[in-house]
Amino acid sequence: MPQGKPLEVPDDGLTTAQRRRLPLLMVNTGDGKGKSTAAFGLAIRAWNHGWDVGVFQFVKSAKWRIGEQSVLERLGELHRETGEGGPVEWHKMGSGWSWSRKEGSEEDHARDAAEGWAEVKRRLAEERHDLYVLDEFTYPMEWGWVDVDDVVETLRDRPGRQFVVVTGRRANPRLVEVADTVTDMGKVKHQMDRSQKGQQGIEW
Image 1 (cartoon, rainbow, N blue to C red):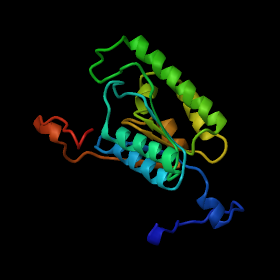
Image 2: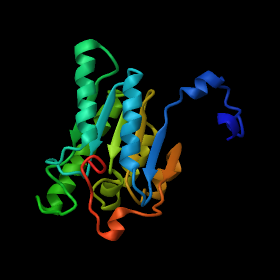
Image 3: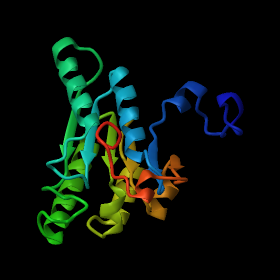
Image 4: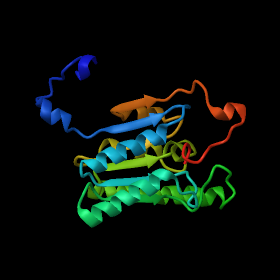
């Protein structure tokens, strides 16, 4: 893709301007660090252009408030106060799921994830947001908490001009197939390999 130009121009009857405005389904996956961070950076960019942004976290603990949440919620407040940027909603789609699995049973988390996905489906049908960040959503798909065929069909056939970015490791091949942009973030090194845990300002 030299100089930002596609290698081939499809014979689809669309102008360059029309094709540029086509909505995208994006996936950030792989074992490397930065999948969610990249998606939140995209959300900030979208806010700057006046887009309506909806963030839906599927795996982070409901008690864990990451830095990007504070920033984006403050940007949402700024929009309400001044009209700058666009509206922002941030939802944690579960009742305290965390990597330690200490809060609630697996059945509780599976039910919460299914209810969270049902809410995202409703919003997609209503064309509620311009950008949806489905953070760590590959895991409920992998664990069977949501139906993969339903997810793939819903995201592929969503109405209007709605952009979606899904993050998480081991993205389902069917999701990868229907996505427009897939980034596989590979791990070369990670500080946890030498037993150094996450740090404030870096991981959250």
